[in-house]
Length: 323
Image 1 (cartoon, rainbow, N blue to C red):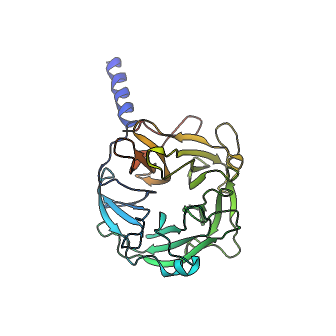
Image 2: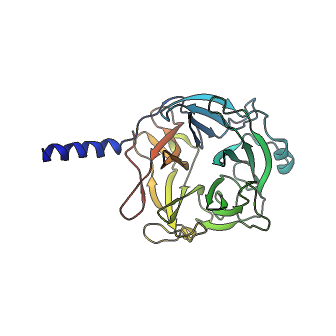
Image 3: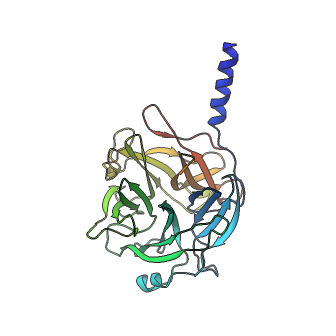
């Protein structure tokens, strides 16, 4: 009887550690996930030079496993972006969805490769419907701007609320990742708030920040190395932690993330090449990691990955085996 119980517990633990393979239309780049009562919605980087203006694309799923395309957000490239940047970007990058009080906030970025002449904008939706995820969005304009000569790049936004305060983490290359305090209601920066550095590789490749709280600590997830090269991509997902959202963040060896530190969480393995562009979201009270990877057995096409986050005895995030 005891042996049977041990085998049963082992089987349950093994099944809990496995992630289910996703199905349907999972071609995506820079995913962000909204979890609603009657389904999930993903938002992702738009298609370059598409007739829709390259606005964020959406997909829907009833269960987080099977996904279908739901179209791009309407309205084309926001006019304020063209006026602000002085050119028309090819598409909108890395939208990030956040919900509070029933309103969904969708942060997004506009730029061009190799430049930090960039802007992060915001759309809001008071009644996001997973059956019509492109409906109801109202553009709220500029959130934060970077220009040539700045030490940061205003792309790859992610919002984290802590009590009655709100923060936006963002950044790519240059001098790394920044944190900016927001007005929780408007989703815009508090008057006088300045971006503060929280992670850097001294000008090297670091981007796509996402911060979650767990057991009294804050965990900063970032992507290191090269994105967007198909099978040649070297993206990998790194993490550090801190006792306060402002930092200082350190990796498992104690190296500060402001000095290039980061503990590797997920890197290329098998057909899963260059995982990154990640975000964290909560589903059924538990944290999940959303990311894209390049499928080495499907021409290097970018696809959606979703994995539940577990925790080691030392309080570091861990992931199950890839499906």
